[in-house]
Amino acid sequence: MVTEFLYLLQDDLYFIVPALWFIGYACKRTPFIPDWLIIWILLCFGVIAACNINGWNIYAASEGIIATGMAVFSHQIVKQTFNREE
Image 1: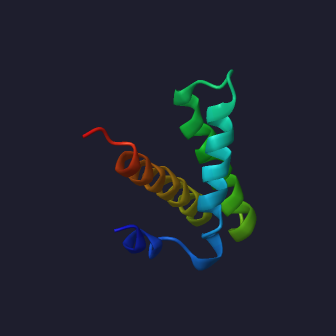
Image 2 (image 1 turned 135 degrees about the vertical axis):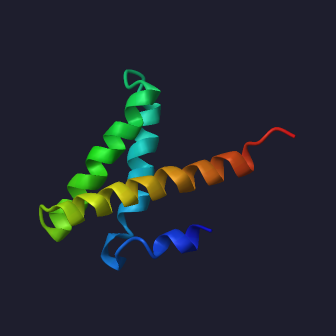
């Protein structure tokens, strides 16, 4: 299922997803950042990174939003698969 989402993202933006995982992990470990704010921080980083690569336009911003969505979605897949309670 995750491989189907990779078709939504340009090849040169694949590295943004693991970078957002790392940023999200760092934010989660920072005590003064509330959990609800982490997704907004990731969204800002994703959009800024995509716009810096592809230029500042709507298409690049949407690519950043897609990359952020893929990072959060893939993190939740891993988290809920391996940390589920049976």
